[in-house]
Length: 476
Image 1 (cartoon, one colour):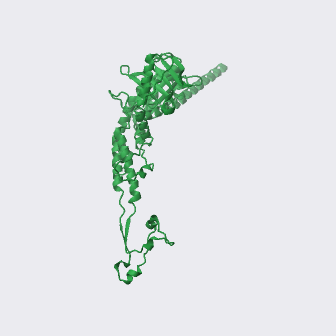
Image 2 (cartoon, rainbow, N blue to C red):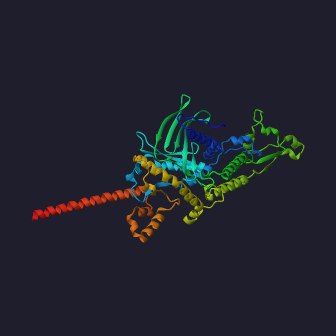
Image 3 (cartoon, one colour):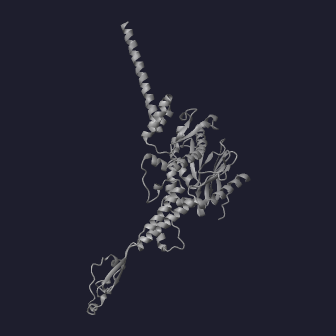
């Protein structure tokens, strides 16, 4: 497929080359990215098993396995952004609350993490809001719709292309192009490309990639749905198809008869009985053949024998092996996808031990996602506050993630109490409340109620002092 060429009026040669390079780059990865989407959505699970003995119609039954989505979601649900924190100042007084609530950052980041795990990459973009919108906007885009060039020196994006609309033959019809200090929005109008909006700013390219498993030679990450994972997914579905065919063909016992009169397989009107009626009719008795009986023929009395139904155990065993291999590939515990031969954890410690690899994977993923949020959120806050640049002191703003381990409330409280006993000063800080396992909402409510209680106590003390002073004056 020939890549689309786009010419925007007013764009110089260098920027136009960068634009069409990004268009070609986006188109080049479309096939792989959509294949990964199909695996995650269980839309690409039926591949013909060439050389197999299962009839082709079994591959049109719509059988599917949700292993790929399970492998992605099991990790994604352990990477939960709780909030941003700033040790050197107050975030809420700097526009953070408007950015966080107005953009539903917590929910948007969850979705971005899912796409990052599926494609290995997604993009976050900060932009200035318009009328009726938050002053600072945060949006996230899948690798299907966006692409950019990473600068190996600054480790930031040199540019970013967002395909906002597509038309016939999947051609881009509306886009946004982010260049250093410039953001351009363009669309096809009347068959020609037109620039709809162009803005300048001092934030460079206000975008950042969220990557999964980057390497020195692949800094833009890789998908969690690797070739081994996809191969095991396909093998599992083929085993499921074979199992379905087995149940239809070999699940019924095979019978044979000696000496039976063919009339027993006919309807009362003389027509041949359907095969399913023969199988399910449950033959109770067959009369002797009178003609053969007179001849004292041993076949005068029908003799019915059968082959036992074939067991589906080999198919189930194969499916179970594929399931366990799939779990190993994605650092999942066996009980996540395996069907049999799995024992439940005998204790909380045993359960935790079975999750160690997945927890380590989640901790690494969180580490890789944090730099993008540390760059994007301060830019959005600066835009919210109508600043031209991000203040230097905001460089210490960081992301706070929930612990990937699933700890009980009792265990958290116990560990927190021991930490507070060792360092009593923590009890008067927000960190101490976090150690006790309180959620951010609970901490905010506690602090708010404590402030109100202190205010009420202060007012009561002042009123009491005033009353006491008034009483003393009257007595004098």
